[in-house]
Amino acid sequence: MIKLGIIGAGRIGRVHSESITKYVKGAEIKAISDVKVTPELTQWAKEMGIANVYEDYRQILQDPEIDAVLVCSSTNTHAPISIEAATAGKHVFCEKPVDADPVKIREVLAAVEKAGVKFQVGFNRRFDHNFKAIKQRVEAGDIGEPHIIRVTSRDPDAPPIEYVKVSGGMFFDMTIHDFDMIRYLSGSEVEEVFAVGQVLVDPAIGEAGDIDTAVITLKLANGAIGVIDNSRKAVYGYDQRAEVFGSKGAVQTRNDTDSTAIYSCASGVIAEKPKYFFLERYMQSFADEMICFIDAVVNDKPTKVNGNDGLQPVLIALAAKKSLDERRPVKVSEVG
Image 1 (cartoon, rainbow, N blue to C red):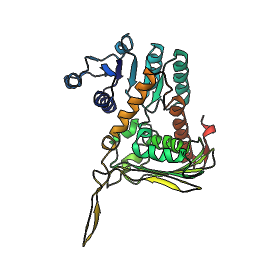
Image 2 (image 1 turned 45 degrees about the vertical axis):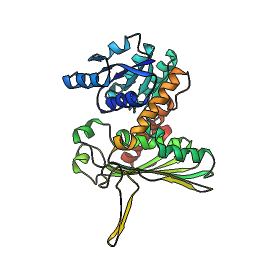
Image 3 (image 1 turned 120 degrees about the horizontal axis):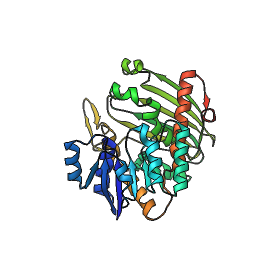
Image 4 (image 1 turned 180 degrees about the horizontal axis):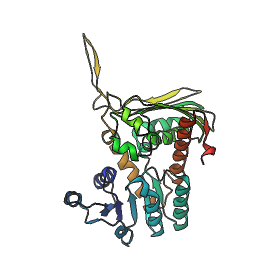
């Protein structure tokens, strides 16, 4: 039985705790930490069967029984805690982004390599059943040479302004998943980015220095073109679709809905709206990425989302931000 420690008991830390408890065999969460331990957190941990709750995450790193840690704390702590964990001999699962600074990400990767521990980055959408189905078709050669990879990602509502002010911007807190998806579905690296963005949802987002609507085009090393469209607010729900178009055909996915029932009557045809947000849409993918991580640790396999997979989307995000600011195409090599 592999023993885990979770650093950070916010929303994503609790999502992983619940998915591990319900779906991951052969793993036990021994401890969880958070900068603020409340009676509510202590009670929740008890209900989840987590024996230890700490304010100081170092107590997790100092526990010789804990084999691996999940770094689910605030983004600015991901890199230093990952380095500390690797140095302590713990295998590391780190939520995205590892850091907004490529230099710090490379320091993490060096520490992981030196320590000889496993390192996986939390791009859970790679484990989603829809996107995996596209990937399988591409790898099988069913669509031929990829020509266009299109990703649509639109949230059901804009985040609180307090979050916008500290998130690092839409390209880092939202589109970064889509940058990873372009790489995943194409099997190629991004070489150049051109981003156009506007504030169309909430003026306060613009006042906070961010955008809420964007279209990004990407030139890939294999010659394909990527297109991403983002919005902070889709009134009909969480819009998550992708398509790969190639020389032999195309493969695309629709949104997940609560049912596939379609009601037809004299006044129109009515179908279900997409699932509301990421917890409903991607819950199984969170469990599957944990199963993959545990399998890599237990059976000494390479992780399926490695350190370079954590680095490249950050470089693309930096290039997109530079493109937006300077209103020109930007090569990823300019920011790397």
